[in-house]
Amino acid sequence: MTNFPVNTFDTAPERSKPALKQLRATFGMIPNILGSMSTSPVLINSLVGLFKNVHGGSFTEDQIQILLLTNAVTNECSWAVAFHTALALKEGVDPADVEAIRERRRPKDKKLAALSALAKTLIQKRGRLDDPDIELFIAAGFSKELVLEVIAVVAASTITNYTASVTKTPLEEPFQPHAWQP
Image 1 (cartoon, rainbow, N blue to C red):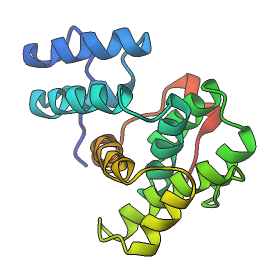
Image 2: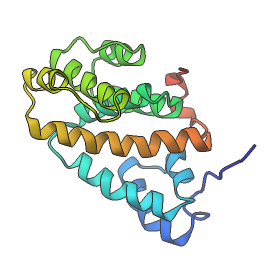
Image 3: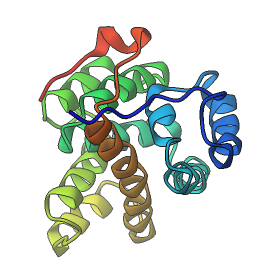
């Protein structure tokens, strides 16, 4: 079995340290997934730019967490589901909506349901959305431009979801109450 390290700031490659420093300032810690990603400076540095753009974009933080949690469930990434469950709840997302997504259902909030549905469909159809997929999203009050912004969020989460799955990133103690299995 191939083991990947979960680097700390001190053990990470030098070219990964600026990214880890930025992300540690955001999270107040270095989540294990970032420690794993830091093994590749190319990967961790790619995430930082995308992360900054996604979290500075048009969606609210609770909407971003809906997207990221949906993506994690759709990609069957246990680490990311637990992590984004914790962050979604911290952002004030209704626990019933969080549980719905974890159970592969849509949130009861109509706008969040459309957001979650678009992300899930985008992943499942590998980007080949049909007009009705987009129209459902727009009918919920989102613009066409935001369809494209969802692609950026999916790209960011794909990086972390795939990394966690490949490296088998261990789940930190604070996220254990939100552990999830596909």
